[in-house]
Amino acid sequence: MEISKDNLSLTPALEDYLETIYLIIQEKKIARVKEIARLRGVRMASVSPAMRRLSDLGLIAYSQREFIDLTPSGEEIARRTLARHDLLTRFFTEILQMNPQNAENDACAMEHHLSDEGMDKLTRLFEFVQLYPKGIDNFIERFHHCSLVNPEIGRCLNHGYPELEKYQHEQESGRSKLSEIESGSRACVLRINARGKMREKLLNIGILPGINIELLHRNATAEPTYEVTFGATTLLLSLDEAEAVIVTLNK
Amino acid sequence: MEISKDNLSLTPALEDYLETIYLIIQEKKIARVKEIARLRGVRMASVSPAMRRLSDLGLIAYSQREFIDLTPSGEEIARRTLARHDLLTRFFTEILQMNPQNAENDACAMEHHLSDEGMDKLTRLFEFVQLYPKGIDNFIERFHHCSLVNPEIGRCLNHGYPELEKYQHEQESGRSKLSEIESGSRACVLRINARGKMREKLLNIGILPGINIELLHRNATAEPTYEVTFGATTLLLSLDEAEAVIVTLNK
DNA sequence: AAAAACATATAGACACATCTAACTGAGTAT
DNA sequence: ATACTCAGTTAGATGTGTCTATATGTTTTT
Image 1 (cartoon, each protein chain N blue to C red):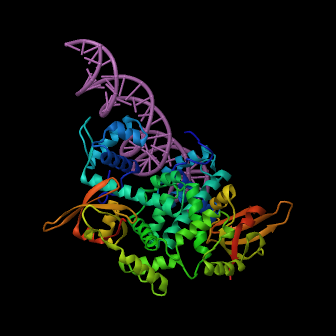
Image 2 (tube, helix red, strand yellow; image 1 turned 45 degrees about the vertical axis):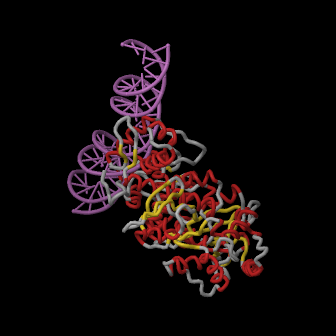
Image 3 (cartoon, rainbow over the protein chains, first blue to last red; image 1 turned 180 degrees about the vertical axis):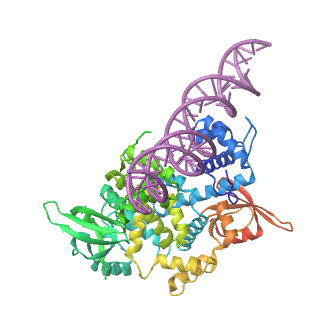
């Protein structure tokens, strides 16, 4: 076990234990093995050796069968992890408007992997959004209105934002469905005009807004297919799929 | 080994192997153990057993010492992972403007933990941003201008956005430093007006924009300290730190 | 064709994180 | 005060992912 710089390079599991201990200590007076096990959803037999390791690392103070307390460095890591958890959860719920349970799960797993710079920049995003909470150009509110109130983002309503409606119309003129462009031409993906499973499938394939995609070949059979290439990938899309990919032709 | 639904619940390591194999296959014709080991930064001896497991799971096709190929389900997972990698990297670089290396590292670790809903919602953010790429109210551009061109976000320049300058001034009037509010009053954190190590420290402590914080007590000694409480935490801040926390009083 | 070079595999070790089952110790109850 | 109960620990197993060192194929060279 090489201790790198200072705190860094703890395993996710150990970080989770510190976080759990921290939360227990805040709420009740002292942390006990049974409670840690309950909150983390593991058996007490798994907690004991973890406490031993954390103790060896100087992150908690405890003697067998006694109460568990965080050392200053243990507390520092716990708070650091918790702050990431908090910020990620809020990013997922407040900005992306995810379901709270998914937001929580994703934040839980990702909190161990966000760099200091990531934390800094994500905070700046919150600071910026907060600077204009209900202002004339509330980006976040409009984003939610667009992508959530009206899930068919092909028809993004900009009522109350006349300049934007105009702007959007200009945009619309240059766009078409991937199924409609000429074979051999390249285009930039603007959005995926699909919902549910189909949207999920296209995203998981890697067809994302902003990528450049080329229609290689159109197979005009009873069930037409569209051979496309993007990044390092080449594959076939069905008609439905190709129609859902909204693009603007390159140059 | 319980195979849950279908593809899900692969370990990050195995997902990484699939991703690596996918990338090799796209570039060269075939994937070999040596190349996989090189790209993943592990020894060949670690790759062999992983290939065995992937083969047992039906995600790759290979026989000992022969070329390695992805099965359709292996390819599906690889692309899914890669799409997450791509989108997270772009979120970190294009939207948050992180250093490419950090963006890459964070994306690499997080790509295994983003739910389908997270992927969907993050994509919608890109779609929305893309709808107004250089429009009258380019949120992203202004965010960058504010938080990056001028890192002292206390003085966010809104040149060219007169309504916003006005708006910002209104905002400014209601704000103060945490060090200046009355003991016993609660306030909402607007931003952290600090850079480098001090900013990092405050964020890691959990003092984030949007949280509610209460100034419990001011210790007016030679080196004054500020006892604050937020969430489940109570701790002491130095004068410098308390001055960096910009808040608006609650009600 | 035999030898050298190289790719890949196996054996054995280690660290982590979990489990079940069995044990220990300390307070509680009758 | 003896036995019960229950928190906590230890022992031993399992699975993953890595390593070093060694063995085994395969290909290339001479």
